[in-house]
Image 1 (tube, rainbow, N blue to C red):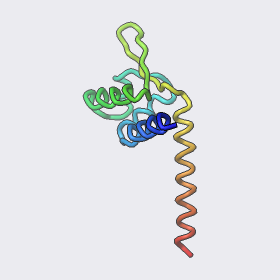
Image 2: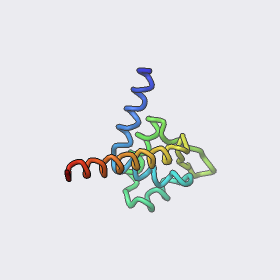
Image 3: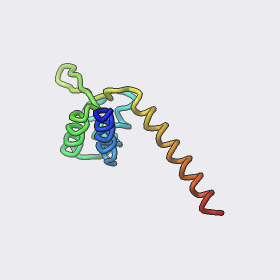
Image 4: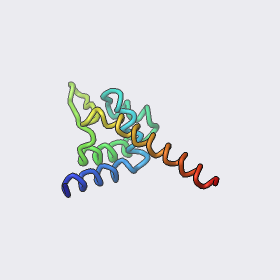
Length: 103
C-alpha cells in the first residue's frame, strides 16, 4: 500500500504544475508531436521538452516513433476522465463549503 501511495503522490505532484497539466489535456484526446503540443499550448520548445521529460519519468506519458516523428500520449488513457471526476468532486465540495459559509 505504501508503494501505491507514493506513486499516487508522485503523480499528483507532477500534475500539480499548470504547464504539465496543460500538456496532459492536449494529448488526452490523441497522440501529439512536440510541434503540435507547442502550437496548442503556446509554450516554447524548450519548456515543452522539459515538461514532457518530467511526465515520461513519472510514467504519465509514453512515446511512439513514426518515421522522424515522436508521438506523445497518455500512458493511461482514462487519466483525463479521472482528472475530470476529481475536478467535479472539488467543485462540488467548493459549492458545499460556500453554502456552509453563507449560514
